[in-house]
Length: 429
Image 1 (cartoon, helix red, strand yellow):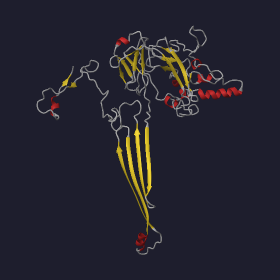
Image 2: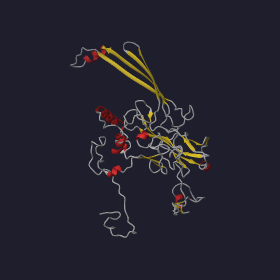
Image 3: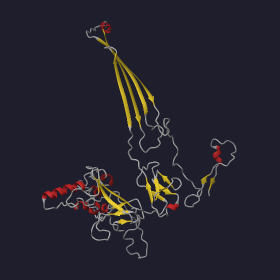
Image 4: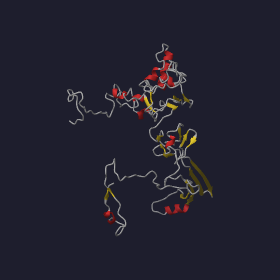
């Protein structure tokens, strides 16, 4: 048996000041009981019933991707995206108990006013350690399942009027996002009819470093603008943008300690880009006589570059091509061919023979994508952007590391082949 750490029998009689070595174990599947398809119809093999580990996943805490939050000017609302109206709602428009009540109040994040009186005022209750963790930038809901069982309890499903109770149960079924707590995150996100709740607001935070992370991925090139108060900072002088990492580094540290707040505006490219295309075509048919038919075809395709993409690799350029084609169809009856066939032994035919001929020819006229330089266009093979790999002679963590040095100059003999590498030695700094 292979063990890590110590068992309870090994340290039951140790002294109080003796160090005990433990190991935290994580199960590959949080479920420890049999799966219940009735609880998780979308994922019937997921075992979550009567599993205390599953409920310890803290799904009532949401990060804001910021730290050191300030109470001043902090504003937070819970939004429901209504598909029927296409409007972002701060309150539900139906339900006996929750109708026209802000969701932030329904879900328990607004219970007192600015004077801490028991009277909701529509604003987020900023209580460090209770509703918010300002150091780590996390919102804490007072219930374990805010969008699940807690939201279901806000509907009047136990009304003595059977009609009202049935209507409230239908509304609870419509709005409650119970799959968020009974299924894995990937499975729960597949329920687009339930995934309608969002956090929206504004806040100010402080960072202990000069780097600021931008939320999400796909920041559009050239869209980042940094303001100190109302002053627009200069990219490359006051700040630097790492688009691949979605980070902004403040180069002028004076703005970090300035009284004015730093504000960053940027745009994000959609994960799925829509590339506009235009396809034009024309077809002409000409009947020279009852036996011959001529046809002409012309088609042109034009692709516009997807928005947000400033450069394309070679082979991925938008198409700008024209295709021209011509075809001929000839069909004519031939009695001569019938007579020739009849000359064959034991063959006698009375049907008229027909001669048919069909031919096609096409020509592709490849155009040039108009990218980067107007009519000329530019395609990139590889500009090795962000491909810099730094090496230090001091090794890692101040530990000397021997590295292969370059061949000393001038090189005796030829500089080609492997012989020049035989003169390379190891170097440590």
